[in-house]
Amino acid sequence: MMKDVYNVIGVMSGTSLDGIDLIYVTFSYNNDWSFNILKAETVAYSLDWYEKLKGLVNNSIDELKAIDVDYTAYLGDVIKQFIVKHNIKNIDAVCSHGHTALHQPDKGLTYQIGNMPCLADILKQKIVCDFRVQDVELGGQGAPLVPIGDKLLFSEYHFCLNLGGFANISMDLNDTRIAYDICPVNIVLNKYAKQLGFDYDDGGEIASKGTHLLALGSTLNNLSFYNEKPPKSLGLEWVNKNIFPLIESSKRKEKDILKTFSDHIARQISRVLRKDSKVLVTGGGAYNSYIISKIKWNKKAEIIIPSADLVEFKEALIFGFLGILKLRGEVNCLQSVTGASKNHSSGKIYLP
Picture (cartoon, rainbow, N blue to C red):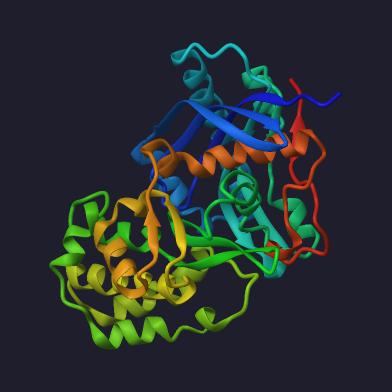
């Protein structure tokens, strides 16, 4: 008989490089799924790891494999410290996304470091990880993966919008779950905030004092990606090729770049939302009051920003949930979302 209560640790490291998100959570099934967040924490990257991860796209496959060994050991240590610090005893599985080193689904490539089998031995726990590879092998984008969690855990909202390194959204359309990446967010904003000596633009305060650059804003809004039909996804490689060269060639002040790009984000998100819809907003960008106010002004949608635990740890929560679905042999990857040849149960299971 299948279990109906699971205690798992969900682990996520995103493209915005804020750190490693860890969450200890209980999931219960009784006709519908529910969850209870017990512990949650973000462990910031050291400067050394931040620089290493920021430059991953420039490494060869052999170099990535060497970094993978070190990163898996490092990740294991971080998870172990989380378990000890919070005196966690009851763990059905550790469900980890790893960190994306390479994502080129059009070439059949996706590589997340930190998903090596030795993680199970380091932690002496069952591991569920490497959720993207199978989807790309089945012709999918390997992203986004969160929408099955949105559908099963947050069905009361018309839209689930996550503002992290990228903005991604999921929704039901004609009883089919649709989801895709909308545009870059913190992966761009944090770069220019750092040039001013800040880790990020707190609340969009710097952007709010800048001047909108009409020519740059227009060029950004006219990028061909925004007119492509889903499924579609973005990666750092796309940003390096399409966004940073445009911004750098404008040779403008950082505060004006932050203003213009924040306006660009709000515009692209507003194009997707429906008026009077109920929108759950999570991810670090949910705290960017400037962008949120612009979206509200553009669309008059009901924007709901939940508790801090959910804002900051929803992706880690859902990767924990994806791991449970994998252990149950249930679908955790939707064809309608990624463009894969079929719905499937993705991820690898490693035992200590």
